Image (cartoon, rainbow, N blue to C red; front, side, top):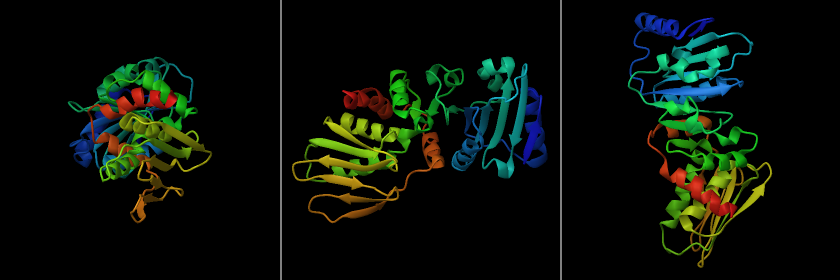
Length: 305
């Protein structure tokens, strides 16, 4: 169900939510967090779809803030999505204009779930210093997505310079399975040092840089990046050791081959992770991702040196 509310107020939005709850059942009960999604001028539907899918694991209230296409004085158009149009969440799409655009924190405060943590997610453009953004200051967790910006690698370095506890980026989440497989492989004998690591992947994909930064930070060894235009994200990680190389290879973006000395080749399902999976993973934890922070601030410096 989609309810359009042009020229409204946050008070009227809350009253309408209460009315729908009374008439249709406990719509807003059992929510575990408020997810705020500023989308700017972009179409919010892709972000809403991902949030709806993630809400099946993390029931929440989703507040989407989109720019008003009309250049008007202070005005608030809103849309409420419930039921089948909202997954296991309830979605509020706000289109403020005029003075309301300059006070987004004040705008959303009346719509926050009481006594529930706040997560902010910028699915497209990344604002300057997300921790100091009006929405970012309210949030326990601040999620960005450097894969969606024009210059992803420059965005990563900017995120590193402005990092604060609670920040994370979905480019890091997209490499979670790669990190897990590499760590599991190195936990097996022979326990030899890695002399050099090589990460191969798409020329501008930030997950490639974060994977290389993680290896440089964790293994304290030289790391080389081989960039390939139009490759499907990360395609290969190679660890060079005295007994032979460990190679995790995924050329097609679907299935990986793990090759180790004196062992048969292992085939592993390793598809490129979907947006909804990455968002759901990040919503599982509301504490600071300390490893991400260390890799972002110290690991990137190692591969840039």
